[in-house]
Image (cartoon, rainbow, N blue to C red; front, side):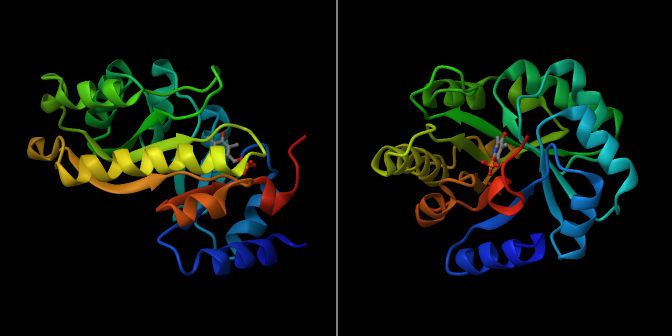
Amino acid sequence: MAIAEQISLINKQLNDSSARLIVVTKTRSMEELKETYAAGAVEFGENRVQEMVEKQAVLPKDILWHQIGHLQTNKVKYIAPFVHLIHSVDSLNLLQEINKQGAKNNRVIQCLLQVFIATEESKFGLDFAEAESLLADPSFAQMQHIRIVGLMGMASFTENEAQIQKEFASLADFFQKLKNNKTGVSTGLVEWIELSMGMSGDYLIAAELGSTLVRVGSAIYGPRH
Ligand SMILES: *Cc1c(COP(=O)(O)O)cnc(C)c1O
């Protein structure tokens, strides 16, 4: 099926939920990205800094670029001038670097804390306690060039829907708790609005459990090579 048709199908499926679609464009060609933009999508997700920078340089400037993959501190400077939202903040150290680069670019960079909810060992992220202690760290309150706008998480890579449901529900509960307690909000640097969860295999489950951002690639373009 054509890219435009897949995007409109997914948007239709998300219609009754609070989730909106981020099209995950990593590894896809410029032609595919142009076709995606022509279909009306403007929120693109990439996981490699160099690839995002190269694509951003030549594509229309109204595209909102989401950094969804693990981000090394020494690469923050390349995306700081334009990145719309960094989903993968998993340390105070990284946040400090984002703040520094935000200052250099005279902007506030929006971030999500990536929380570990899967059973696999390989996935990045903070556990719930680590996320809370990051938000309570005194050095965090001093950062003028970042804003935490929510959480991101990835479920286990499994066919077991009950397992996926359980993991997303635990993240949604944690999100709700932070929101209810207004955790970090008094710093002026935190707003609990976005819950980024759901990929090609599990975005419908995530949308049902309160996701606001689903990150979908292969369900639109087919398998990655
Ligand atoms: C690649 C990737 C996605 C999209 O994966 P698909 O299965 O192709 O939809 C979503 N989130 C993250 C963090 C990714 O790295």
